[in-house]
Length: 226
Image (cartoon, rainbow, N blue to C red; front, side, top):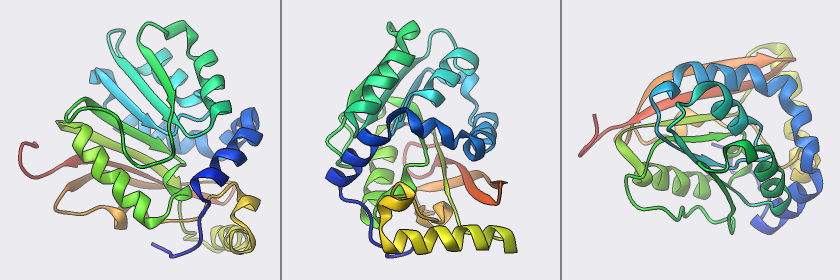
């Protein structure tokens, strides 16, 4: 993982408060990757889902409408007050079983051990520092049930000449100022996982318009896990 500068929590909050609903314009390259994640996350059996970085609530709406059982509960957090407001409005039809709260930006998750059977985060880890990524992964392991699944998507490094060109340009903009690319940078999710804690059960790189995304589904390993 690179040692590039990342946005502070306060700067990320301010940026995404300004971006607001415009974040959904990124669906042109995000939807295929999140679709692949959904296929491999075994969501039809999930009863408790946590999302780290809910954004506008677009993915949560998709999960609740099309993929989760009618008995499943959803809990999401986001650092941005604007995003929390948008997500709450979007998820109003499921207000009896969907909760969205604003976080303080820290990696800590205010939930007891073993609360959720899916931990979902899409296009958030690529905003975080290496230290925060490690801390969030530790929290994900803590709050997941032994049989739970970690379900992630992020921007990743280019493999083809076209992808390398696009992501190289994005990397140069990020080096000038992370705000120019919404704080996002290419990372390698699989290298962030401690193999003593996680077992990768699905990994794919999905590219749309030469923007590659890494999709990762992993199960817990170690004491008390399957």
